[in-house]
Image (cartoon, rainbow, N blue to C red):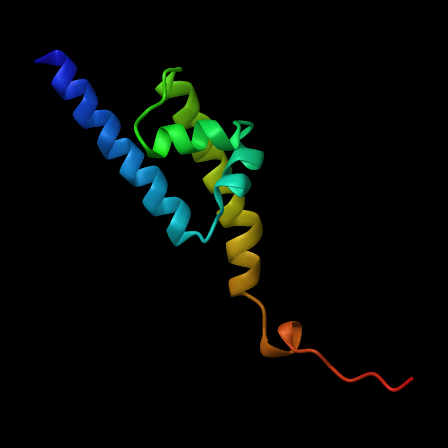
Length: 91
C-alpha cells in the first residue's frame, strides 16, 4: 500500500512540474539550466521515472521556477509597447 501512495505522490508532483513549466513557458532545457539538473533528469521527473532524491530535485526546481518568474516573467510583463517594438533607424 505504501508503494502505491508513493507512486501517486510522485505522479502528482510530476504533473505539477510539467504544468508549471509550461505555464511559465519554460523549456526543459531552461529548467535544467536554472535548476542545476540535466534535461534528462527533468524529463525523468516529469515522467515520474526519476530514481534520485525527489526532495532535493523539487527544491532545485522550485528555486529555478522562482528565478524564472522573478527575472524573466515579471520584467517582461512590466514592459511597455515601446520596449518591445522595433524602430526604424536612419543610417
